[in-house]
Length: 271
Image (cartoon, rainbow, N blue to C red; front, side, top):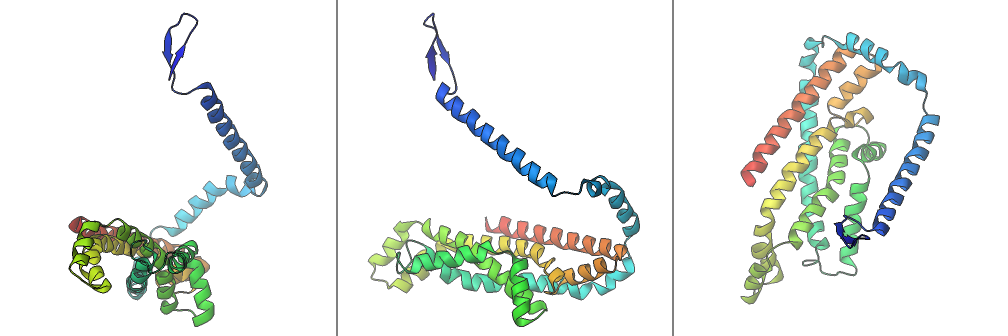
């Protein structure tokens, strides 16, 4: 904004004095919060182990190389289980997320006062808990294994998928819906012919994107007993079999890279 000097010369400044003071005060509060947090973290940290970390990391690297390549034959089924956990969990989540999304969208919900808040609560509650926590709870309920991993991934993914889908529903072109409604179509026909065709690209993109995320999440569910390659990783870590650990990490990296490539190709074809 322009500011007049003693010689009546206009000088342009980005902010007023009041805004500059508020900005500096905000930076001061942020710095104070950082100092307080750092003091708490520093007090709870054993700095001897932090200083010794490079040596420990080098020792583990020496023990882990070269990977135990002959162990690769035992990782076929675990990595297949991991892919199944991610795929089945994503499919179940999509089936559950679609009706929740329609109930949460403002332009399709039967009731904005009752039904929509319940649908939004489902979305928030399933998204707020990590898949590892869901896996721990499900293992206590239904026992360890791949099924617990599938359900954990599905519950975790419902809120994510439903949120993106209901946002896509709210952003549809209403002219097409009004045209179909004017023909005397029922509510279900309006959804089938006026809304669903418009959200199909978004739905496909969400499905592929979430599947890609679930590949990553399912690789670690075995650490808590939910099956997949994480189970072999946990067993190798517990026995300090570092060459097996390095091989498992390479297999996980390869699986994630392949899933990323597949999802990128599918999203590119959709867009």
